[in-house]
Image 1 (cartoon, rainbow, N blue to C red):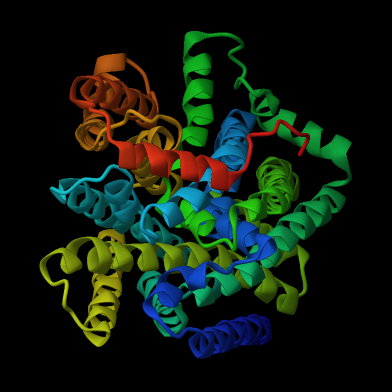
Image 2: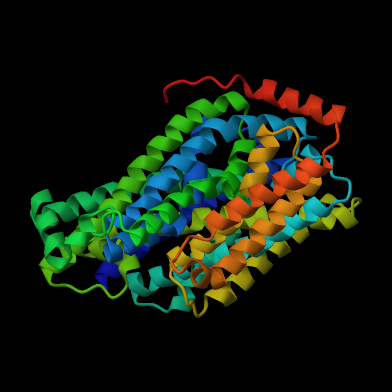
Amino acid sequence: MPDQTFQITALVVYFAVLLGIGFYAYRRTVDHEGYMLAGRQLGPGTAALSAGASDMSGWLMMGLPGAIYASGLIEAWIAIGLTCGAYLNWRFVAPRLRSYTEVAQNSITIPSFLENRLHDTSRALRVTSGVIVLVFFTFYVSSMMVAGGEFFRLAFGGSYLTGMVVVAAVTLVYTVIGGFLAASLTDVVQGVMMMVALLVVPVLAIGAVGGPGEVAAGVREVDPSRLSLLGGEALSPMSLLGVVSALAWGLGYFGQPHVIVRFMAMRDAASAGPARRIGMTWMIVSLLGAVACGVIGIAFFHRTGNTLDNPELVVLAMSQTLLHPLVVGLVFAAVLAAIMSTVSSQLLVSSSAFVEDLYKIVRRDASPRTLMTLGRVCVLAVAVVAGVLAIDPSDTILDLVGFAWAGFGASFGPAILLCLFWRRLTNRGALAGMITGAVTVFVWDAYGPLVAGAELYEIVPGFGVNVLVAVVVSRFTWTADPAIEREFDAAVAGAGPPKVTAS
């Protein structure tokens, strides 16, 4: 009981800080653009840590360490792919998207940017994009609900349902109050907490096992193949396919609305350079810590004779054994930080997709109060549906996140890249590509193994089909448009020259 008192105290302090930030952001938010994009005034550090924290989610603290613990270093290819994808996203997409969204009628959502960039008067592109956002974010938020339920089950022996409700309730309060600024500022606090936890826990665990040599020996005693990046099947077709699938996670970055919206919210395109350096440093350190937790956990539980029923709880279980209860509470808070930072971002993007990209199409004269109310209702509705899906999860956190990640990457990724770097993309090409990319993800998830004879991550065929369809359709439907040409040139100029420099 005293241990739980310490842990609950740490969590209460953490929740109080989040709510305080939400109230501060509420005082600073004065209009609709401020609520959705913080007035495009995020500094490089805030943008970088906010993008990282909202991106990594409970997957960083639970999903990735659990996958490494269960399968070994072959799962680390996911981290490698994500690192490469994040770097390319910051290096090439961030400055041009920041510039182009302002040139394209000051677009504040991804669907509105696609419509304005391609001068689509049919509204089909905007509506389809909004629906895709709502569908895949429902699955994404559901994965975070699962993480919240599992967290409370281990931390306090409480019910899975209680964990889901607590995580959702606190996140909803500060998100609804403070909007995008609150989500971004809390992400900074949460990002720092996550990185520190992923540094402290593996260092202490190495000491408990007896040093790096003992860790390696302990892992070999369990299964030597877990120390191999190819899973002990060097150059076999199955292992290579697994590596390709893991690396393909990096493709998803180009189409994640809750990540790239941070690019749109930066002060200017020039902020992308320092933000990239801050963000990549945070990401590399955090991913190395997560991978280390998974590997060290194998030796730790083997040598101590303890058992771990759920691999995704390896970080939490090690911290309970190694740390003072108050510090354990802070580690638990870091896990919640990973979950809540992503949920807040996803709920806001879902809200903006409904209000900006669906409702305002039929009610352009809606009052600001009506729009705000509908936005809050949408946030609540997505949270409720996601919670229902998470009540009895049939997949792991990694599986749920992977499906949603593939959905966004395969539907929006090619559209964003082609919008920014190819003049001749048309609205029909983008629409056809997005639809086929999204459908491919659903179909491949259900029937892909039967076709390919092995598990190929659904983002690979989805992304490829999207690019192919978008380019082919655009070739047949493109006509010269001087206005689009002028906007493209202005966006390129605003983003600055594509210098090749060391980062």
